[in-house]
Length: 114
Image 1 (cartoon, rainbow, N blue to C red):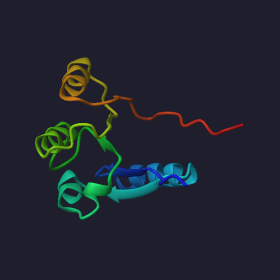
Image 2: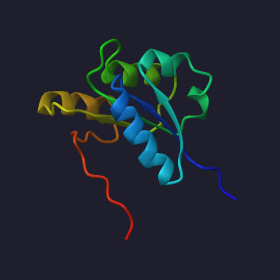
Image 3: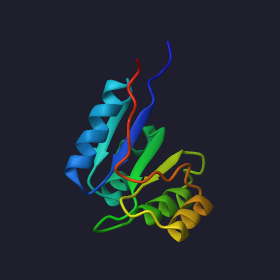
Image 4: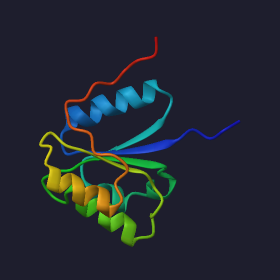
C-alpha cells in the first residue's frame, strides 16, 4: 500500500486555502493548510511535506521567499508550485529559476474526472 502524498497549501487568503484544501482532499491527498510561510516553516509537518502550493503575494513572507528559505534548509527536491492572481513574466522567470515546479495564474480551472 502506498503512502498518500502530503501537500502543504500556503496562502494568506482563507478562501483560497479552503478551496485548495477541499479539492486536494477530494483527490485523495493529505493536506495541511497554512496562513503564512512562517507557519509552514515552524510547523512539525514540514518534514512530511511532499509538495508545496503557495501564493506568490502574501502579507508577510512572500512565496518566492518561502521557496528560497525551503531550498536553503535543504528541501531541494520538494516540488513547489507558486500560484498568483497577478501573473508577471519577470516574477515567473525568477520563480522558475529559483526552482518552482509550476507558476499557474489564479483563478484556475480544476478539472474533475469524468
